[in-house]
Image 1 (cartoon, rainbow, N blue to C red):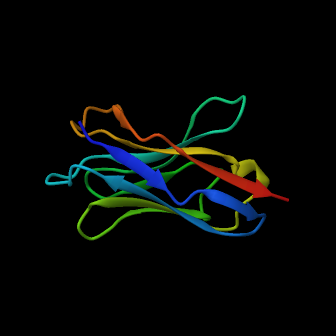
Image 2: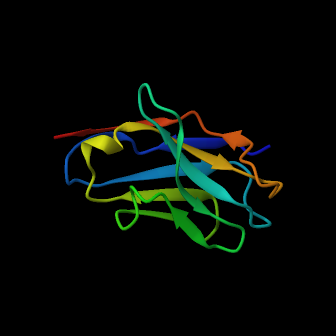
Amino acid sequence: QVQLTESGGGSVQSGGSLRLSCSISRYLYDNYPMAWFRQAQGKEREEVATIDSGGSTKYAESVKGRFTISLDSDKSTLFLEMDSLKPEDTAIYYCAADPLDSGGFTDWGQGTQVTVSS
């Protein structure tokens, strides 16, 4: 099991930027997929960005061109750089891992709140 701890959330005005971090307790001795999800109040959880075991990334259409997912060089931290934020980006953001590369994210952080005001 991988322990994940998010940080970096907060309140920002529309058009602003935030960088979320996810500390990974078990380093990626072997690469495995990781992702950022978000859940807005009253809505279902949404996959925002993923990075697979080969390092390829994918983004939801709603954030493409504004958000960037990345791993630091020692693979101990997952990042989500969020630019040009909009009020509709307001949500709790979660990082997730699929350490067995099974096709499903099994390990989750506790979440960090992002609030974007207009």
